[in-house]
Each structure stands twice: as C-alpha cells, then as structure tokens.
Image (cartoon, rainbow, N blue to C red; front, side):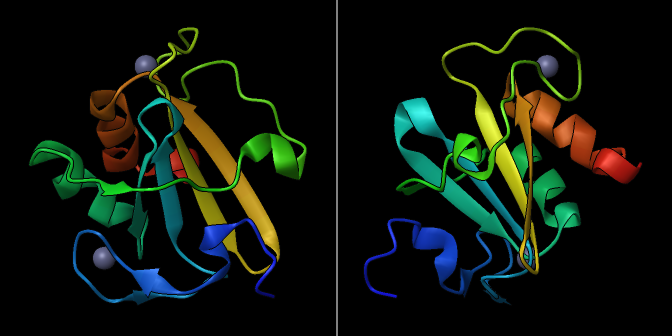
Length: 118
Ligand SMILES: [Zn+2]
Ligand SMILES: [Zn+2]
C-alpha cells in the first residue's frame, strides 16, 4: 500500500501519551492551513493536549471530503469555520467520522464534554 496518499493508513504514536495508535483506531487531528497534525489514542487525551499548548507535528491527514463528508461549522459552537479550522477524524475500523472546529479551545471543550456522544 505504498501508493496510499493517506499517511494515517499506518499506525503511529499518540501525540499526548506516546502509545501506539493503530490505523483503524483512535483519532487524527489536523490544521490543514498550517500543514500540521496530531494523533490521539482516545478522545480523553485531546483534553490535556489542548489545555497545555497543543503541540503539533508537520503533516496532513486525509481530507474528510475524500470520505464523502463536507464540514462547514464548528461541532462545538456552530460558527462558520475559519481558514484555520481544525479537523478531527475518528478512526473506527473501516469508518472515518470527521468533525471540524473553529479553534483548539473549542476542540478541547468538545472533547472534555465527551465529543459526539457526550
Ligand atoms: Zn494517548
Ligand atoms: Zn467553535
């Protein structure tokens, strides 16, 4: 699968705690405008990461448009997304569940409240 443009097709380390995040599990976060990304083993690890300064790695994740989803509003506050929007994609087996956020603050608040299922 070396021709996959989706770098998240491989396992990687959680940006917060360092455990291995399998390709079909966990969360991938990106700020496309800044070409930077992060990975999380579970949603709970987004919370301290957002609170303590949001460390990023250079790179991209797959665009949610590639999985047939268009995101126009912040999942937390409902505002229209700025150019600096963040994309968080949950990987669950074959499924990719994206949400978008206007800021790291709102991503953190959403994660703290339990995310989609909070
Ligand atoms: Zn973790
Ligand atoms: Zn927001």
